Image (cartoon, rainbow, N blue to C red; front, side, top):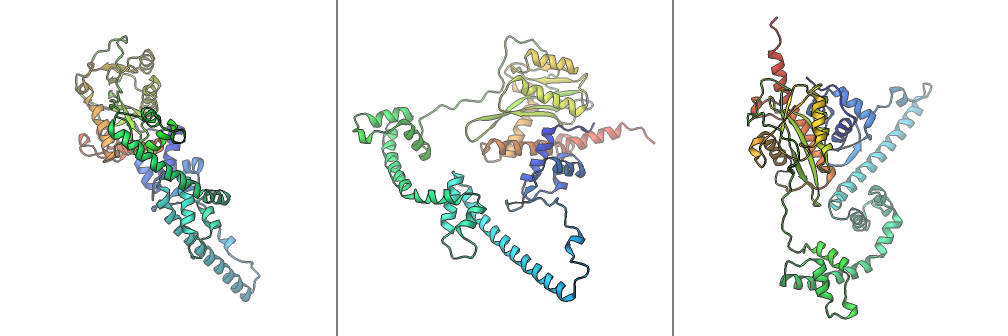
Length: 424
């Protein structure tokens, strides 16, 4: 059964996906999400910002804007031919000036984009203005550059005035890096606190350093003490929980949709060392992702939200089986109450056996492999949420699945429904 009611969060994510995807079209995004174009256009009117990302990565006005009426473009009805020619020449000159202005702004922003990929976005903007304001190109004034990269001229001039002091600090930090490297090379297990103590041991007062400065310089230079990598655990057994039998016995098939589901929690690593967590509810018949939830925690609410989303998608889960591992959230009393309320029978594999939930594990692996590809982490939380949302919705509507005879899961279910129709 196709999903008719969409949550406000889903609508906002769909609008954000359209506005943030370079060169995206309403038709393409609507097909990815499995909705009609008119629905997405309505959401854009309600939740849209009026901006979208062009194919070159720049922000532009949304093309879904009303065009000026014909009457507003015409002049007075009683104007003479000479007046009309003068008016049109003035309008033409204004349009040429506007075109020149927009072309210049586009050139400036294209060059500025190379600076914005650096570490400190604000400093990069200041540096861009400093590097380009000295050119003799018309229109590339400090005032114009500051306006386009959205900084105050007073802030830029204050930053420029502080250049000598920054250069002095940079030289002092470079000297400190060399002192730190000597200590670290002698014992690479030492972190900032121990290296600070080593540097200050017997040093005169003028050479003593603060541990916060040492930590900052070490981060910038990529120096750190050895830390044993910890494996992220998303399955935390709950020994005191209820005993639930394995009703699937590694048989991840179903005769029809909405009868058997599997689910799991997987971590989504962020570059800053934190994680987001994704909970899934997957139909064994079509491999359709009936429900999911993303959060920055692994509390019971995460898996509850995923199951509620599946219930909203299907209309009802009464009589269905949901299979998972023995994670503490799946063994919790609150989750058992929700399953009972929705008419869902719980099933769990053996403790410590990933093969007993292989379908969910395979889904998680495919997600990370296809979204991250050669990367190990997502750059930040927003990028992670956007990319995962796009992949999850496209997985259901466009991605061809070998299990589904290389149809998408929704198309596979549609074919199943067609076979149940009585012959005419």
